[in-house]
View 1 (cartoon, rainbow, N blue to C red):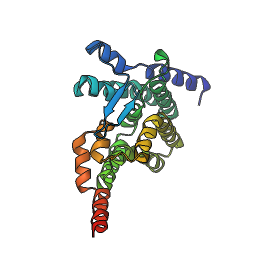
View 2 (cartoon, rainbow, N blue to C red):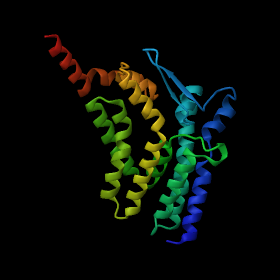
View 3 (cartoon, rainbow, N blue to C red):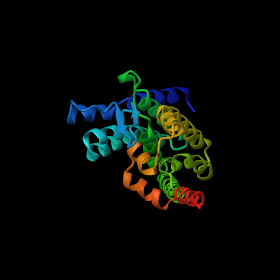
View 4 (cartoon, rainbow, N blue to C red):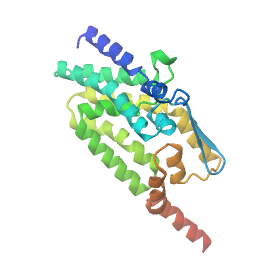
Length: 247
């Protein structure tokens, strides 16, 4: 690998990743809308807050159409440059993966916006969908099935991201793919720390967090959460324990 190309891939990736399409679309569609902060009221009076400047914030502020548009643009700004590098240097996909990591960092810590950005889920899948679409499909499906069976909305959402690490190790001969996926997970989970801390604190405080309520807090669709509350293994186990306690 050429040090100059590594540098160029990283710098260009970071600068492109720093583009905040959430802010751009927010200003274009409704300058009065706040796409930099999410506040979700929970049924018990608690609130769930996030400063993630993301497609989710746009969807909640401006509607699904603009949220999806933001997500696709966030995927493209990181995934397309990574794909171009891989096409230019097919024998050294690490250039594209370095671009992907740098783009993810730019999305989370954008140079143009005082280093306050999103979390980067779209950035990761922008790279994976273009460089390994089969892996994105298989791991997403496996994570979704696992989440549905267990009955936990966060497993449904995030298991696929973690499963991409063993997938990359099994499917690709180049260790660069595994390193990329480990780095992507590390960046994502680190950036999600404020939300995860709130979730853990709510559980410690005894907040009645059903899957429907968790789904609402993480903007994932309350209908899906209700399904898990009815049919998931966790819900069935809790109902069984309640019946035994009442006997």
